[in-house]
Image (cartoon, rainbow, N blue to C red; front, top):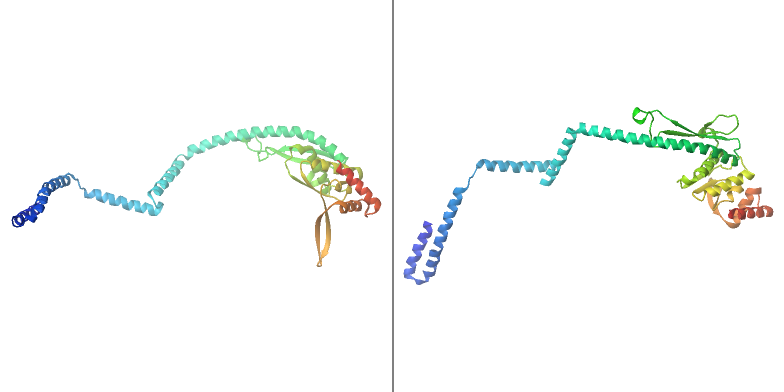
Length: 321
């Protein structure tokens, strides 16, 4: 303020000599009280500040800590806080793992109880249905030229722990289901997979599929050698059953019998050829006259006029079924 007063004195002296300094004198005189007020305010404000060197040190240390945390746990404060939340949750899980384990054991016990109840209900229904299947399968197999065949659905259980009533539970329940078959009188029932031939397996599958058709969701069925050891009326029966079953499934049937082939919606001929010194297999669809000739050949080994007429009649009669 002393310097500003000196400036004002100098301007007044100039003003005595040159009136041009009058405006400057007035400006300084007007500013002087304002500057004095500002000086008083700054002095009072300075006196009110409580400067603590230790506080500055604390702030600097905190800033360094944040930089260190960013290097380890994320590029931002939010990343650090998110990491902290995850770590806190993991710590809580560890600290309360005993309680959670007990809760899980209780839940597991409840699930096992429900599972066992449902599995027992399923087993009861299976056993009731299996008795019906046994009788129906024997009748169906007799129609498929397996007259003396006996059939049985055997349902057994594997032992488990006490939490499931002593039964071993798997994805299919508590039952182990086997199909047993006795192809001839006097033979004991044995597992189908170990006893039946390829043709017998196909006919058993056809019989079972016919019985279970309504509840079967398998889209494609393949029958190989289903005509093995049969002919005449039995072959006609097999063909008719295949036709009936095809209303709910896509069927692929490999056969040498015209009685079965004539029921097909699509007839594919499989032939072996030698090309370039190698044997290759060709599969192609045959229709109309070519199909008639193939059915005739399957009937009598040739495509004579009589065989052709017989084949035409056979195809025509099957198309009306």
